[in-house]
Length: 390
Length: 133
Image 1 (spheres, rainbow over the protein chains, first blue to last red):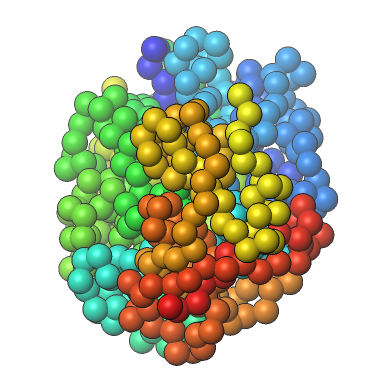
Image 2 (image 1 turned 180 degrees about the horizontal axis):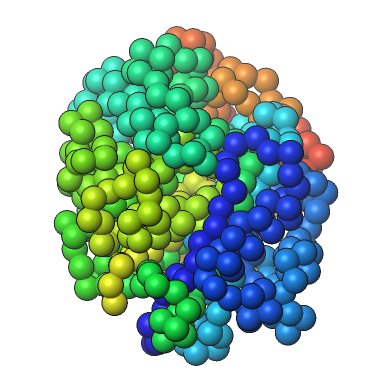
């Protein structure tokens, strides 16, 4: 495989937007194209992420419209990706595979989502469509509910009192809001404390409101390029050193919800391709859709042993200045979670970190970063390892 | 290759008070709900098997913010049947406001209820209901 880089990135602010899905995507995409010192006419394919356009705007088949809106050439095919919350990362991985294989030299990949245009009950219903429609959805399960079940199981399996676990979960929300307060594009830019988390309304026992990420609007996009081409165009290309993606079935097949097997397999593939160990990761953007989700992730990504990662935020180890900085952008929790765009925004954050351009939330000297995106009820995980040097 | 147990047949049996699954002639595992191959070994050599309608409640949650069309609060649980396969369903007969971790590990019996399909669902669906044994 040829060496592949991310040449340019772009994202809109995350939060509540007045813009349409395609307007948001256009803003992110043209920023990424300009950041790569190329023109839209140079793009050879668009890998476009969107999950719920049919419900948000009554719009399917958005990819060719987004393609036209930013002036891509007719010869560049536009294809929609949908992998629930992992959508954009999966699009980016497939773009990188085809650039690596020599099919294309320059591909635009990313995603957009306008979730807040839906009411909370409709949004909750449509998000729950990523559970098994025949064997899970009829129970009225929700995404907070899935991770709530994982939280109770975690407490039971590792003999941690649920009150103690919830305090450590609250510390994760506090840490990610602390990071989000330093990110001018985050949905929530306000610090919170554990009292506020623990006094929030109950969403799905034992998860309270601030254990959960918000529904957000936003878009993000990146330009994936052959490394040799990129050297002529940009000063700081960021290398894709390793990738992995894995799939698991519905929850009733996975059984032990505290072990995200798809993540264990995907991240191992990425570490192995990059020829590094988890210890070498300086900065990580991982899938903290709920506070408990960050605990599951730091364990299955290999930063902590199973059952030992729950107090990492409390000890300050995952905060800016800690041993492995987790979610300096604020994560899904504070930066926001426009599901079709999330993965590209995680990649954007790691690229800015590795370029040394992350401002107040810069992880000093970061050279190797990990992106972790989970889709659905633990059914899809996609991991990317990025490096500032080849 | 055709699975011997379709979704429709599984649903019809539920309506008659029977829980059907698939027995793998290769590894001996039970698969329920039905799917094309054995959930454990991927084997294709499957025969229909009656699943015992008891199990152990492994984990649960109380849904308080529900999808459109559902009325909270209600309890969703993951139950491991005696056959080893897990089912998602609703725990009835327990006040959601009283539901705590002591439920985990409790024995339950399994029946079913009809959940009215909304505009997006492919019609009404029979779904597992658990009650404490």
